[in-house]
Length: 397
Image (tube, rainbow, N blue to C red):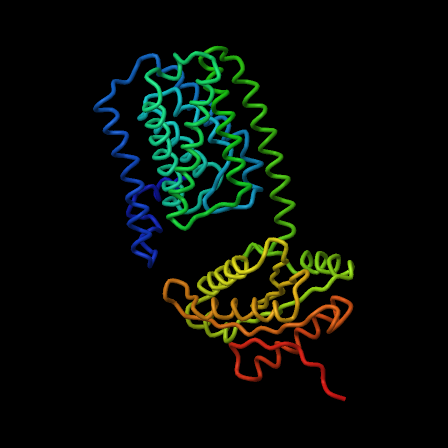
């Protein structure tokens, strides 16, 4: 704990070690907007005394919830940006409280998570908090433009419901946009989780105005949802490669075998990064891992949703293209090869990829046979000089 507190100083942040200066500047701008917005709100808007009790309740809920969810959170797979159900208390604060008090609730929640659950790089947690605070300002602004009344004074009708839900959408979209420009996109499932938390935050805010005892039910519901998130993530984690987020070898093989068992045409790409060892030797394994992740992102972006992409091992990847002809597979493989050829991590080294292509059932009727054909084509591409795509050619008799 003492070591973590010592890292609270801004000069100790790992942010300064990033080589991308534009990203550093962007992070600092969002952090500054969060602080400046709170200062301006304190200057222009008096803090209502009626806010103090809801502020204390929401802050307490955030702290208690962090403690109750610690066993779940420590098992969860870390993602960037980190999204969870703490937005229940945060969005409730945005609706009910003075903007500076809402910003304080958000800050306390993220700080508690950093201290008690996942003590990673503080600048990332600070950026997530700032992004949430700035998104809260946007939601408040939208709410104020569309309504003269405070949330507490809204009539309980359809128009008011639509107004509050609209503010929630502004919050979600604005937060997504802030993360997007930081190149920190979460999965659709994460944002669905965030949307659920916002919906509960609306219910929480109304409960604190009309029937505060409902707060106990919301805490229970949130913990149950949290456990459901853990089960989903553990299931996904068992199927995916932790470095790239692609299917691991076993999961890819099982899914590919099931697909080929249907007897339909398919194509298989086997890819290997050229001279990847030189990247690891020159820049270190952390940079090498970033290259693997970047190549995996390229593969995902160049295939269809129905295609199966996996990490086969080391610097090898495999892609099954259901329904694809040999010509389609070659075109996709060439497109991937050209994209990878121009890829580099923060200017540190470039990689190329060699690709072997085989087809089902032309080059084999089982997964093992088709993979063997693609592997032979890959070996031929390597032998021919690397950074090229070759289709399997059966040896002449």
